[in-house]
Length: 284
Length: 284
Image (tube, rainbow over all chains, first blue to last red; front, side):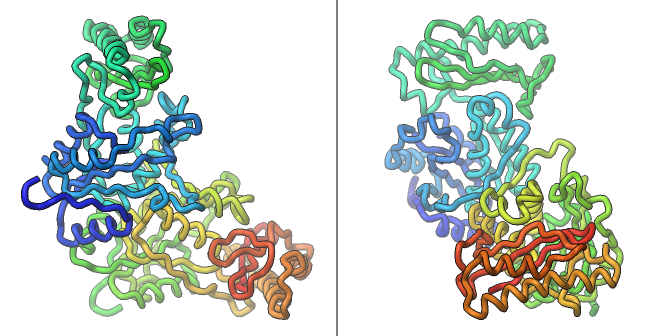
């Protein structure tokens, strides 16, 4: 925006050198890691990054190692040119958009694996997903050298995994989060929502409604996780919706809890809505 | 040594802050990662680090995650005070000696795992060893932020694993190596040699003699890996020695090869010599 135009960097080496130069000049770097197909939710992360001051880097990389063999890697939406424009409009300073070949050598063989938090929730049905996430984030952090990285709270388990990784491996990056951005219907924004037509999107809002029902029961004083789970499952269920999981977890670690601690708990859920896998969560 | 005395840092946070300060002042940092019990071999690494210029950091950390459940973690030699003196005598600027509790939180759960190179040679008999090595080195690199890290060639497979990790994860640290330092008998220096009496040490020199025999055959023009392996196994074998493996590998990757490429191959071996596990290797 304005006079200085946004830099688009494709080469990891060039990005690493640019970041090193920024650090040598004591510049703060804030990273927004994305897989592109940017929507309002992503842009709220960029806004948050801009508030940090310093240099705002948005990475766009559809990361092959976080998709399972039967998942939607091939058809995941890719729209680099419009993503670049959206980033520029938000005032991003750099977009880093490497190719898969530039990140993963043919004989690539080193993975970063968080083993506890990753094993629950989405980790059960997507066994190598978080290994792919932690691996690519380690790579992006090593290239971009961010002081701060911004994540969306829709992927609450991802946030917990990444925070644990940063703590365990003494990474010099602070993890900050932004609340879930929702469509008018209440459906959490996701790049995968575009797989659905408007009617389906409206129907998928039942996921958020079910979470709200769980929250209502919790707010009324119930701390029994089984009762809240049952109510959410009951509320979301219909012919089009297949529950993958509904769990009550610690809001910081995403690990299962046996009783709700009001203000420090979260209902997390994943469902198949037709052919689309959707996740959402709510603090309770 | 000299006017400026060596700094001893125990706290990871203090080390990280000191390293950050050095980087802000564009100082080069060279790290020599050790498990202490320093011998001449280690000191040759410190000498090499001093040649790099800048700040020389020696880390001393007996890393629990790289020992198997039936290995010698508990009895591994610890002699911090004399190690500090040895480092100071060599002109090290900083010794970083954290406690295990300061590195690994009780609920630590994130590991770095190189999966290809680590699966061979020592990886077969020590299944989680290299995972421990790559994990602790990632932690040490993130804390100390070295431009260069120095390793001994005795642990040739470790060097290959670490180089692969650095490449795969885009770590901003250059890996350099120092040749094997040998006792007068030819036995490769190791902190574990002190588990042996002088007579045993002399006997253990047959490992190096067997490697030399393999090299002699290779030098004479033989590129057949099976013939060289057989000669080495034959030469090393006696009542006290049990071969764990003898392999001919690519000298850079430590991956098995089917035919010797002169100047780019290595004979790597591990043996049980009485109760002591010893490794050694030779370029061919």
